Image 1 (cartoon, rainbow, N blue to C red):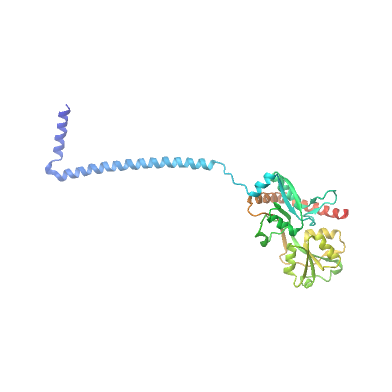
Image 2: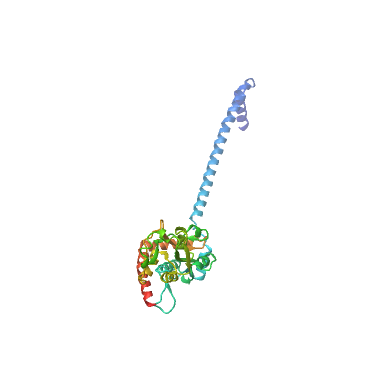
Length: 319
């Protein structure tokens, strides 16, 4: 049966593709090859598409799995140090009420004020204890850059020069720069020009010192470590005026009846305060900014200003 079927097929093949019809034979073969070629190409494309889809699906799953993993950001060296030691070391410079001053109502020396409330809130947010190191303002910024303190909070103005060596938080408590004079000199000093060539007292290494040097021509600048020392210089007639932050100067006027704010106004003399932080510690900076925003929004800064202004006056009475 197989032989007969084979012969029949062979006959049909020969009838279709006769030797005399070589061109027809060639054409038919080509058509068959083209048909098979297209089929193979279609099959190959189909397989490629399936493979690509499968790979894409696997890749997507892998990417999704990778992206679903929690991204743990590495903590800064300062954050690691604070957590390891369980404390936040804050440097400040007392004698600057209501920002920071020594509480004389208690036996032990304790620095209190607006900035100390801010420092405590930051320590609470970090979940660590607060350690305060009190020093003069000139030494404060050096202690920060050398790593002796973690943060400096002392009514610090974030100037462009300071930003070169340290980072600053967002601003808080903007205030104007004013001049304190003796009441007896009220008519003598009415405008900035009246102070030209005079002796002007300031706290050393502060914004007020820079302002006096820039705005008061030919003035002899006397810079001392603490504001109370400069106030005494003014009372004793050793300086003609004292450039000071308005909110701070107000505290000294309350218990010095012979002193007053002059009418002198400096252009663009509004000063902002900010916390200073060692460079490169963005996570600590974020925490401080969060605390500043919270206590600005809830009115704590205003409350602290009133509270510690009153305490500063009571402190003076206890001396």
